[in-house]
Length: 65
Image: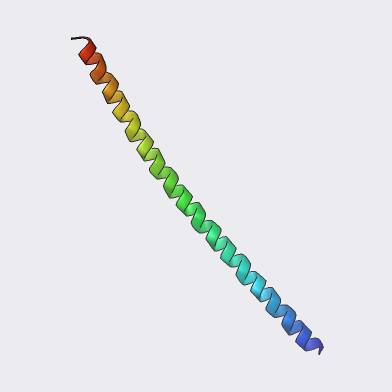
């Protein structure tokens, strides 16, 4: 009987370990996606800034004519 209780306890611990491992894997995946999204957002913001700078330059040139 005592051995069965130990086996049940071990199975419960194993399930908890698997569950926690899955949570960690999910969190890592989310962090990696967030990092990629951040890098993509930064690139888009830089491109938008460059476009704005070009528009300001064009506007200044047209006003000086």
